[in-house]
Image (cartoon, rainbow, N blue to C red; front, side, top):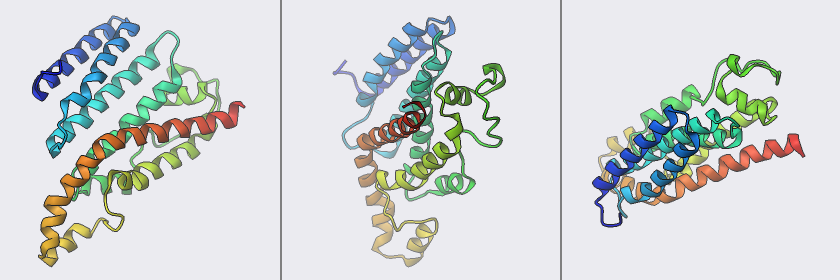
Length: 234
């Protein structure tokens, strides 16, 4: 496996994901999840030490695929793993925001989501009752209720959005003084900054972020959910 090219490794990753999907469809959830563990071991092998933008997009896309599949299994099992479902679900959403950041310095997509407060769930937050039938509710609401943290949903969402729209760009490495109008201002200057910001800096930032960002996302989400779970269950 170590001798495979990144292209061959990517093909193998897709094959394993397909095998997991097959098991999922016939409700062999344990087998489907174990197969995903094999896929997770391949993700780091699909990216080089100095990945270009397209490689990073593939890498983050693979992580999103993995998290989505894991969350689907966790919520569908006979005894659902609500905590892991929430972690994987929120990780996937955050990683999708990272793909917007991967377009730095062209961040119109990121700023559009930020301004619209694009969130994992939105609109009517529903009743605070913990007795609502799962058939009448979304998976994320059911999970919050089963973990007895549904009453903290607004606080959880607020902290989560602050993280993905304020902290995540800094973790990714985007300069703190870079804002929505920065690129236009830089291009108007027609100086060395244009080459540095549009050519050199994006690769430097993106390559540094590859290993760190998924770790920081997982750490934040795990600690966030634990914080409110402990408040309600201690």
